[in-house]
Amino acid sequence: MNKKLSVFAIGTGGAFDTDKVNSSFYVKFKNDKILVDCGYNVFPYIKENMPEVLEELNAVFITHLDDDHIGSLKSLLFYRYYILGKSTLIRCGEDITRALIDYLPSNNVMKNGKYVKINIWSLIDLPNFNPDTLKASGNLPNSFIYPVKCVHHVPSYGFVFGFKDGGMIYISGDTKAAISIEETINLIDNVYNIKESFLLHDFTYHNVPEETSHACQKDIEVRYSTRFIERLNYYHNDKCVLNGLIYELKEK
Image 1 (cartoon, rainbow, N blue to C red):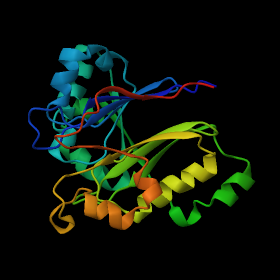
Image 2: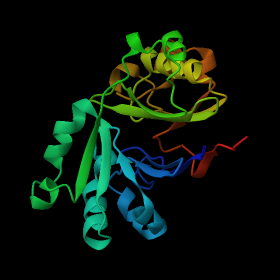
Image 3: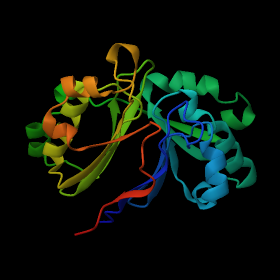
Image 4: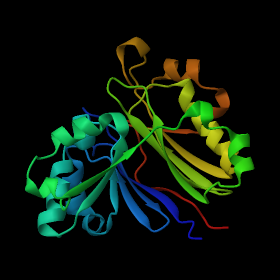
């Protein structure tokens, strides 16, 4: 089985970090090439610096609908359709789909599915996501992608990509620290016997939890275990130094 898994940081900036590219990641997973988020300066950056991405990507995953996460999505979709002759698959959480459809142009190209296709994800149902039950069923896939519900001022999702008995990556999207996030990651670790992981988590230096819809130090220390905190790599802020290829799973 192809166990290719890597993540390239296109940008790690927040909404107001105008000197940085908005938070966006390019994930290579098996044979798929996936863009996670497309904020207001992401498409111009990709077109100028990574034009091959526009040709080869298989899907765009949307965490939520704030402008710094979808602000140039229409431009990317139009460019791929009108210049490259390609349709684009969008994957998103179930409760942002209606708003996303309203955001996209309502025209014949959109309606006939040639311009964009939207796949809706249901959430992991935590009460039924039982490690013992899944292991006992013998039906665990060798690879997986899961949406993970976030806590933000609008509906928001993170995404997990990984392999059974192998590695995984998690991209949180915009979120406060939430006990359910650590629970979900730990469950996936357990169910799929994860050997290594790279966890990307939203973070703000505005350390007043009641004044922000992003994770801050006080928020994280209250809701996450020390062990989980040690696994986190923070992004979505002006001090983030992650760039380029930031994780690659080495096939054993």
